[in-house]
Length: 162
Image (cartoon, rainbow, N blue to C red; front, side):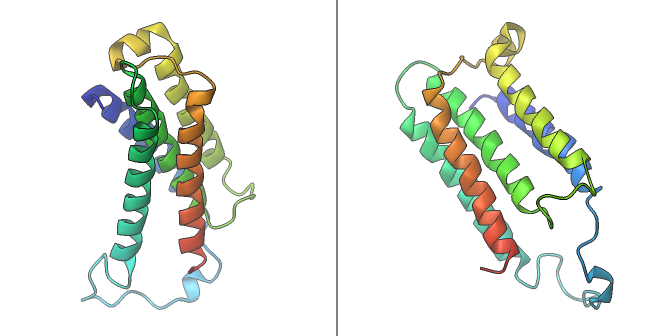
């Protein structure tokens, strides 16, 4: 993956969706829970295990997609680019407390905008030249779609305590 592609993904996943996640409503009963003990580490109480699991799933799904697409000049990098974006957006949607709520319309809009800007990186000549991507066929989007689904499913299962 190229440095510009990584920066583009960070902008889309941490910029747009990160701000939209901040507008998510509180989970039910959040104010009834006791505060975290002052001496407890920020990654305590199992948080580091959840972060590690989600990171491993995103990395494995993205690299698996790139291996699936190996061969062809630049194609595997573009598949990796889209798979990494899809997996991270899947995690964002999977971490949502209530999936089909209208309480925060910004999050689905931010995810759609990020996906559209990710697609623009493949199909708009200016962005394609800057980010060094290649257009993908419909079939090439199968592995990134699986990566997004894996990210979403893992986040949902962890959210439900499974």
